[in-house]
Amino acid sequence: MADPLPTYKEVSYNISCQGRTRYNRADLGDGYTQIAPDGINANERNWQLELRNLTTAYLQNYITFFEGLLGNAFAWTPKGDTVSQKWLYLNYDYHPVADDMWTMNVSIEKDFRLY
Image 1: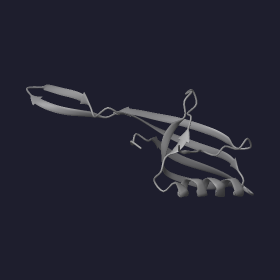
Image 2: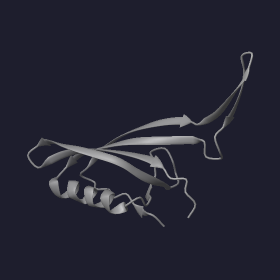
Image 3: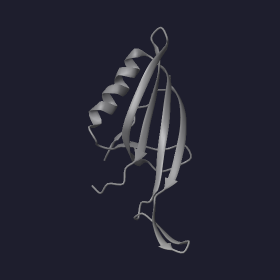
Image 4: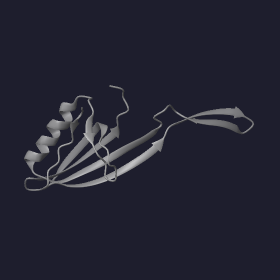
């Protein structure tokens, strides 16, 4: 089972989702086209997580968690879903907002690999 995304009650979260469907398209000429979903997992969801009110210690915990994944998935349940799913970390950035307070932005995408 994938490791769960760490959560801390002191940290507030903003999340946003961008969904898209991948299609294969064939132009048949004379203005006709054929469109079909690209595989069985053609619906993609990418999430942006904004972690706010991070102390330096919490920030370091998240950095260690994401960098330690090394391409492995982690478990997370998006808001509104009831089942935990596997996600891949794509990238992160962080910046200070006050003394010993940070905001971290993390991009993740759904993992469809077979295990």
